Image 1 (cartoon, rainbow, N blue to C red):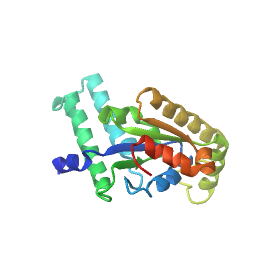
Image 2: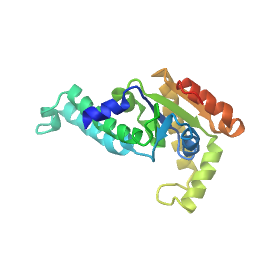
Image 3: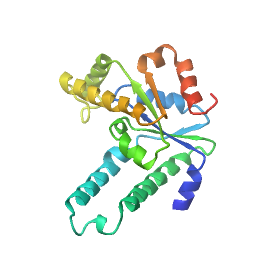
Image 4: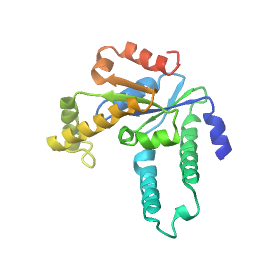
Length: 208
């Protein structure tokens, strides 16, 4: 199964679409998914929920020298290989949905906070970072918290604003860590969507 996953991903680009919540990640994902060369899925939370705790525990055990831990069996390189193989299996499952695609697009907004872990495993990964005016983000999240998203949306303006600052700051750091970084604003997508999409796809080596 692992060898098959690697075969499926061979020649494909792995792209992470990130941004602060309610910044237009889902909208941009839907637009890009119309291309026959782009395959995507629902949010996986792969790094934010699943792999991040594993990395944290691994680092803690290595730093404290805790006995009876996974580090007694695996080296640092073994552990990275384990996580890369696990994530490759997930991405290959996504890619199976559209065999013609050359781009595997993973959209989880919270992955903007986990780009270091992503690049550690996938150094050639591409990032698309969408940024929206914080006033619009605050209004959208407050509305969501009172209607369809009460379990995850906040209605407190200061909390939303702090989250936006953190997310955007984290996202902007990606551009100094890799050349495979694109930045787009929600307003640009709204005012000139076709040109914005063509620019994004062109930088991914995809013909619109």
